[in-house]
Image 1 (cartoon, rainbow, N blue to C red):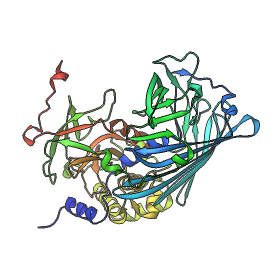
Image 2 (image 1 turned 90 degrees about the vertical axis):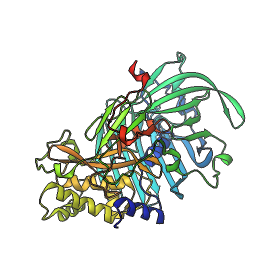
Image 3 (image 1 turned 60 degrees about the horizontal axis):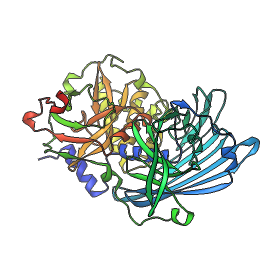
Image 4 (image 1 turned 120 degrees about the vertical axis):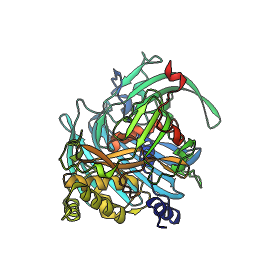
Length: 511
């Protein structure tokens, strides 16, 4: 009997490295970067003390980075006074992260010039890890951040409008500790994110004084909670406004430490993917050819996700996923799906206008009649030609096309670029998928065929994707970071097959 796609895929993963599931990694290190390059926006406006940053310049400070109590890296923050009342910030970070039982060394570097009110003037950022490198530099000019992004051999020049000069908050955040600050107050600051190259806002709430045990010593600190794209991040300031501790929902913790302690590493740390996987209750049936399956979901309060859409129907807490039937996707009408126009756009990380990507896509669909045949040709090429290995970096179609290495987000980004380059509207979908008795965070694609969206997974060679793919949102990294709100708070119960078509509502939801 021939092996199914699932069997071939999981055999290859057992021989090498389990390599599906990258969204978790992206979310986790993006949250990590929040500890280095904060993005805040306050409900009341903040006026920074223009001399505060200058008075405390010319210092070097250190933070240790921990994951599940293991020391995995450090941050060095260096502040110097520049010309015209500016402050130069030089931040370096090194992390050693265990992904699929393989250590990945990550180097990050940020150099920036801030004005005395902490607003950004210029920046230069780089990210290095095995199989991946990116760098970006730019400046704030007349209502915009003008930047240049280099990924692999590709360089993009662009600008992002900003309504007011953005801030680049640092590990010193004394501007939050105003004389009128009261528990429950919320503040807002415009900011620019040098990682995703976006200008956006988040909300910070003052939670009051908090006694925190750090390294065997009780500290009386100011606690703040930041809501960054749905992910709640807690941080604690001392009376000088220095960040003493910061923690993300993914299990990462930053601690202010002396140099000798900050620069040390532990020998081993927990596997990142396994640590954020979602354990299930119930029994998962054989997924091959399964047409429909229902789950009872436990979700964090106050968070909204795109669950009731397309092949997914949500009623109460029960989500039913129905696998598409390819024979029903024969329409050739162009751009008839909701949101199809936006799903054709080239972006800094999905380079649908790159000439080599365009040339490759055109050669793959040449002579293929019908949209489904073209989609299959593109998907088969990505599945066959991209080596399945974990890559810690920003999902980037051009870099993946050149290096031919990546996991699920690289596969999804490259397929999206190829498909968009030849006029096929394509989304990146993010959510979870079942693997080895748990759900792992994952990314795949949706394509427009006729007037409906069709799922496909080029990492596992599935067209359509099986019913264990539970989609929470669509979009690139800026949207995918919302998955962070689920980490540690998502519960999944697989309903028995004979109940899977029933949408029951728990008693507490009927009231």
